[in-house]
Length: 150
Image 1 (cartoon, rainbow, N blue to C red):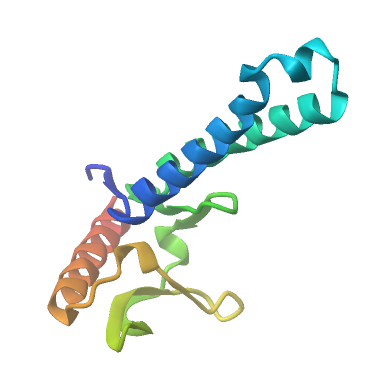
Image 2: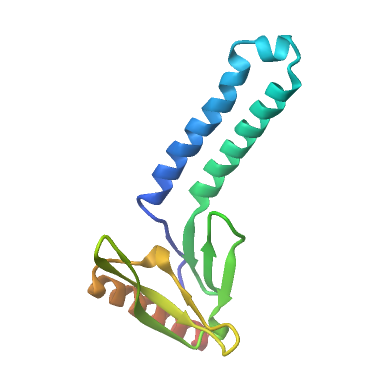
């Protein structure tokens, strides 16, 4: 089974631009030289925090994805640790309307897990077209079946 990485097309560039501006805001504290020359510790710490958090935000934004491979499904979120769901823990994959945005329904694959875990929607694989979402669900089902045979 080959590894498939699906990344959000709109969310990543927007987050990268926002955090680049955030990083540049932190860099401006050091460009005039007054903050460092006068040893303004509040300005130095604030500039370092802005630069560090901006670079961290850019790194986290670039990592956003859903990775599908022989082990299972890995969801790399922006604000949380990676969620790895092995194929053995997935009971079924269904296509469900998970949200409504701008008056249009958003369909996405939903992984049905064991009784205690419930379900996990893969919103990064979502689509406004039900046929597109169904195609992704069929791919996930075939990956699950392939992993069960291995």
